[in-house]
Length: 374
Image (cartoon, rainbow, N blue to C red):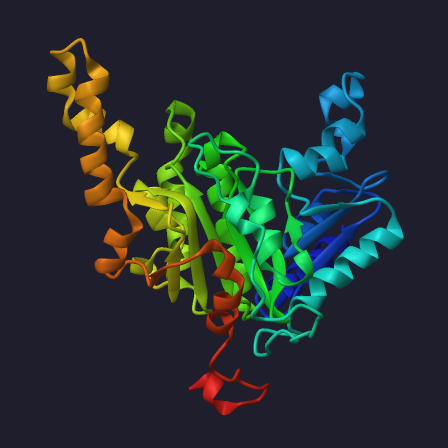
């Protein structure tokens, strides 16, 4: 029973470490109860695919396991925690793989919050052109699986360490480098839920942005979002509260923030994805980017619903207002004139422009610097 006190002290120490130094938990066996909570305090949890298990209660106290309906792996194994609960950020094949993953995560981070990540040179030139992006950014309104290709084309050596790849897949997060400097990447994934933001995606991205902020890692956001996911499940689940976490994370972050609108940025979701109004430092769009309250088709159906309801030839009545709406509100050059975008750029030029804006300008404080406490 006296172990409770020591366990509480351990948890208190882990909380004290949070936001000061990177904390990684590597789970290679069964962890339950308060030990699972300790792992939950970590910045990153790596779970072994074969034997790694995490359970809040002892498996012998869970009726489904006692009665044989489920086994421990089905309840708290790597597959469940990487895709359903969102506890595990990555799954390791074995112990060696887990250590390699932990080492790679640490390579993107500083030793502590008062330092900067190491700049690691590589063979890619900073001013290289992203030749593949001319074919990657589609004009097709039905979103394909292209966002990972965009990210890999822009970052150094096409190396992107995705985190939580199986959880809330409508948002992609992870670490990469631009001109050798560590950056955190946040991107909408149109392949899943058309890239809409939902509760899980908002919380996933917000937590990652705050982690990047505390460890002085700039955040690069690739935007292709049609809005927040509609429906009673989201509304009653608190999408307003959880969506606000994402806005809060971007607004409070003091690291350099960059955003590239690749296709769509509509409504409140546009504001939630590192918009200029929340203090983003450098925002650009590709020529086909659309920034508006909503898509042209939906807007015209609302604005001109009376005319559309009174005619049988909807196509002819619909086309002219569509063109007018796109030219007045959706065109990225309109946003640029208003100062909400810094530039409209050729997709091939994306990579050369980002590194100069991603550098941390101010020197970090050093340990013991009295100005930290004033």
